[in-house]
Image (tube, rainbow, N blue to C red; front, side, top):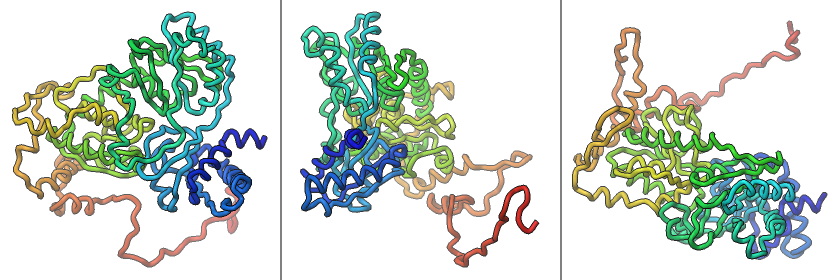
Length: 491
C-alpha cells in the first residue's frame, strides 16, 4: 500500500529533483480534491529525503498551498513567492503553462485504467473508420501510454502508419529570462502555423504527423474524462472526428453535440462584442508567462478599434463580482487555456477570450472556423494593432447584426486628448447603466455630480464588504439562544 502511494505521487522522482537542484524551500501545490493527502505526501518526502540525503535532508522545508486565486491547473507563483519558495511542486491536473519567475515540477498522478479494454474499444471503432488514429490523453493517464503502445504493436513499421501517439511535453518547467521568449511556442497550434508545420502542441501534449498529412485526416482518440483539456481538443480541432474513451465507465463516447454547440455560442459572443464601447480586461492569471504582454496587446487592440478599456483584477470571476461594473459592455478574460472558457449566461455582460476579442476588434477579420485557446498563439498569429492604427484611411461603416444596420465605430484617435473626458467616460456609462426610474418614468436626480472616475466609485452606495473607518468602537455582541429547537433554554 505504501509503495502504491509513493508511486502515485512520484515521491522518488520528486526527491531526486529537489536534491539535484539543491532546493531548500519548496511549495507543494494541491488541488482541493487532493488536499487531504498533503500531510501524507509531506511525511513521505521528508522520510525519503533523509534516506537519500541524510546530511541536508533536515534543512529542506515544505509548504503546502491550496485554494489558489485562479485555476488550480496553473502554478500559483504569487502564493509561493509569499513564502520565499525556490520551487513549486504541482500535483494533479495541469495545463503545463510556462511560468514567469519560479521553476515548477509536475506530478500528474496515475489514474487507473483497463489497458486491454481500452485497446479493444479502439480497435473495434477503427474497423468502422478508414482514418488513421491519433491517440491523445489526459496527463493522469500518461503512465499507461507505453503499455497501450505495446498492446497496439507500434514498434512495427506497418502499425506506425495507422497510429500516432502524443507525448508529454515535459514534467519540469524553468522560467525564461525574457517573458516574450517563453511565449514563443516551438510548435504553435494555430491554423496559419499548421499549414507549414507537422508538429503540434496542446494541453501539455506534443506530437508529429507524417509529411504530407493533415490533422483533419485523423481520428482523434481521447483517453480520459470530459475535462477542460478535452474541451480544448474538441474546439481547437473542430474539423476532426473525435472519440473519447471513458476509463471510469469503460465505454466509448462518440456524441459531442454539446461541445460543437459551444462554437456557435462563441461566434454569437464575438458578434455581440463588436458593438461594445467599454471593455473590461479581466486578469485571470498572475503566473502564466506573457500575461502582461497579452494585456498590453489587448489594450492596443481596443484603442485602435476606437473603444475604451479598463483592467480589472478580482480573482475568479463570478456574476456577483462583475455586476459591480455594469458600465462594461463586454469582458476579456486573460487566463490559461483550460480556464479561458467561461459560461457567461448568468453574467450581465458576455465574457470572451483574447482570440475572440482579436476577431471582434480587428476590422476585416473573419472567423474561418479555426479556434485558438492559448493567448500566446493569439499574439503570434495576429497582426499588430499599431499598424492598423497608423492607417490614415477612413474605415467603412460596419454592419451590426444586433442593431440591424450599418454603424460607425467611434474613433478615439480623431479626438483631441483630454484627460478629464477620458476619466469621465466610465462615469457617464455607469450613470446610464445604473439609473433608477420611478412610476413616472423620470430619472431620479443625483445630489452631486462626480468630477472623476475614482470619485464616482467612492460615492457608490454599495462597495462590497468594507469596515467603517469613522467608527472604531467595537459593537456589543449578543448571546443567542441555546438548546434544541423544540425547547430552547429559558423558555
